[in-house]
Image 1 (spheres, rainbow, N blue to C red):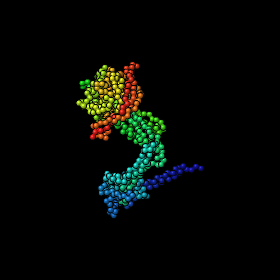
Image 2: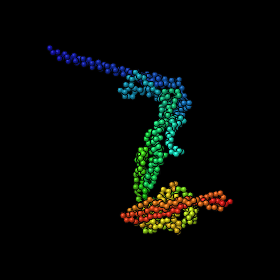
Image 3: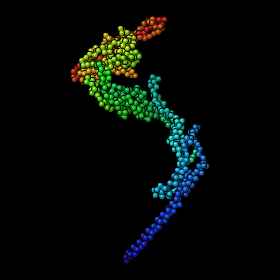
Amino acid sequence: MQPDKKKILKSYFKIKNWWQQTLVYLLAFLCLIIFIYHLAYWQKIYPGVKILNQIVGNQTVSEAIDIINQKLNLQKTPSFLNLFAAKQQWQINLEEISFSYDLEKTVQNAYQIGRTKRTIKDLKTKFKLWFKEENLPLAYQLNQDSLESQVASIASQVFIPAIEPTIKIDRTQENPKIIIESGKDGQELDKRKLLSLVNNHLAEVDFSSIELPLIETSPSLTNEETKNTQQRAEKFLNKKIVITAEENKWELEENDLIGFLSFKNEFAQEKIASWTANLALTVNRLPENATFQFNGGRATEFQPAKDGLTLDQKKTTDLITKSLEQIERGETPQEIKLPLTRTPPLVKTADVNNLGIKELLGKGVSYFQGSIVNRIHNIQLATSKLNGILIPPGEIFSFNKNLGDVSASTGYKEAYIIKEGRTILGDGGGVCQTSTTLFRAALQAGLPIIERHAHAYRVGYYEQNSPVGIDATVFDPTADLKIKNDTPAYLLLQTHIDLQKKMLTYEFYGTNDGRKVTLSKSRIWDQTSPPPDLYQDDPTLPKGTVKQVDWQAWGAKVSFDYQVERSGEILQKQTFYSNYRAWQSVYLRGTGQ
């Protein structure tokens, strides 16, 4: 017997209607409660809210201000906030930072709890306050810059700089020894944390003393780090890294290399990068446009075009690090050629003249470290007289003719010269420095050398960063330096002197016709030791006075080969000989009164 379907459906709808009616009543009741709750706390702070642990719930804004103000009156605000560390004390002057409490803002913050106009969020906040009270700090105002200034002053007083570990080479003994000083700890103030503590104390009306949060800086090494670094440093003794760019050269010696070591079994990249950044200041340059101005057969104004250079500092740092790693592995590092980016100038040399002066053909360099003041003066004077000279194609250049008279009347001063087998003071001492430099420039340019004379003895100036035998002496009228311009265009001679480096540079500019120069190494034979020192009586000097007027030099015979080739044709093939006499030291011994 099947159940009556109509009765079942009637019962179902009856139950459904009952639940719907109950739900409606519940919702209406909740709405009524919420309405009554909001009506009860209209213009009042919601229950569960505190300020400085004082209950301000169910209070109006003005009532809450009175409550908090009463508490502040009971706890008077001091003029200073005390700080301490160890046995030292400091104070933050609250008046100087314009400190004051803002009660109205504080109470408004309390009043706005549960009133963000975001219905769901506000309901959750009000419900949460029934079970967990919310305690607000006091809002306040102050001059943040003044506060930070006072904190910075305290920080400077407590600061103790850490002494970084150092590596030194002790060469007082026969074998060099690596000494590592492990450094010392330092301390500094955690300013961020102190500012946070000050703000928290002020917000909580807590004027108890605050201990300064100090940070210990500890660069000291462990015994293991010291031992490991010492072993690493020993591998860099008597080692060096050579770095080149164009004609410039730098050498990182053992002290530099050891200084790049990190105490953590690596290399100090920041130190390498710092060294590279300083190098970039020397290497980097802007493009320079060419300029020409000729007057009376001379270039009165000349600047060859130069590419701009920019050092790739990242690659350079990587290359130095790679070389350091090679040395540490026991390998010999290759010479580092600096990675440079070139930027061409807008105006090139060939664009601004019609004499065929387009490019650098050859450069001669010599050094004069140790020269007396008068000798340097004469080098400068002779160099200025030769600067800017134009040599037409096919012409033979005479050094003596272009230099002119060398005497006191033309501005030269007394300096040491070689004359009649003696080194004596004479006008123009140092002029041979310029002829030697010009000789070297002519060789590099591949020019025919028509006349050249070697010095009577080996002169130390001409062997500074140069092989033996590449010198040229002049003395009008017996010794000249003559060079022929066999290029298809004019030659321009440019001279430069660097007093800081004590370096002289002569350059020939013209048209490159494809010639290639080969200079052999200097050959030295028949070396003879200097004769014994010679002492001569001199009645013009006081008795007992000894004055050296000549210096010893070894005698030797020297030669080198010079060949110039162009497209398979030999243009120049010559061997230059120098027969240097052994030279004795000469002293004058005073016999006068």
